[in-house]
Image 1 (cartoon, helix red, strand yellow):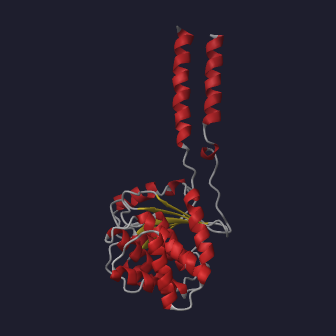
Image 2 (spheres, rainbow, N blue to C red; image 1 turned 90 degrees about the vertical axis):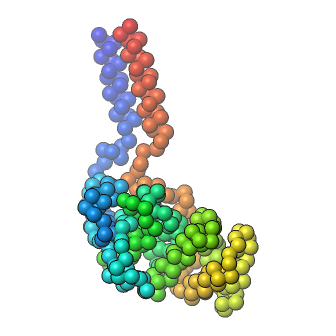
Image 3 (cartoon, rainbow, N blue to C red; image 1 turned 45 degrees about the horizontal axis):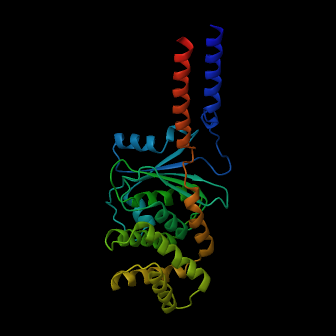
Length: 295
C-alpha cells in the first residue's frame, strides 16, 4: 500500500513538471502598446464569428478590442475597391516593441486560399506596418484580402496614421502576388521570394529611372527562373517602380522577411509536438508500472 501511494505521488509530481508553465500564467495587459485588436469581416454570420473567435483564441486574451470591417472600409483604404464587397477573413493584431518585426500566422490555412503569410508581410511592410503579431482566420474558403483591410483599420484605431499611397501600393502588390500564383502558375513561395529579392536590389542599387527598375526585375526573374507573360512582367515593373519611389527602408524589409520564417509561431505558445509524445510515453510507462504494482 505504501509502495502504491508513493507511486501515485510520483505521478502527480511528474504531471506537474510536464505541464507547460504558460497554462498557469495569467495574461497580462500591455498598458504601453494596448490590448490585441480583433477585426472581423462584417459579413460573418453569428456562428461563423464564433468559429473565428475560437480560431483566434479571443477568449484566452485578458482583454481585446473588437471591430468589424466592411465595404466602406475597403474603399477608404484601397482605391477602386467595391463598397458592396463581401468581407469574411478576419485578423487579430497584437502590437510589439520596436525591432520585434512581424510574425504572421494564418491559423486556418485551408480557408485562406490565395494570400500566404509572406505575402501579408511584404504588403504590410510596404504599407508601413511593422512590429506586430498578426493572426488571420476565416470560417470558409476565401482569398484573404479583407483581413489586410482589417489590419489597416486596426492600426488607425490604435493611433497610427497610414499613408494611403502606401496602402494602395501594398494592396496592388498583394493583388499582383496572388495573380502570379493563381493565374501565372508561379509557386506562392517563389512569388514572395521574387518580391523580396527585387526590393532588396532596389534598396542596394537605388534605381533612379524606370529602366533601371526594369533591369532589376528582369535580373531577378532570370535568377529565379520565373517565366512571365509580357503583360504580367510589365505589371511587376510598374509596381516596383511605384514602390521604389516610396519612403521605405528596403533593407529592413528584407531583414524582417528573412527572419520571419524562423519566428512564425503561435503567440499564445502552442505546446511543442514533442511534449505530447512525452506525455504518451509517460502514460504508457505508467500503465506498465500499474500492472506490475498490482500483479
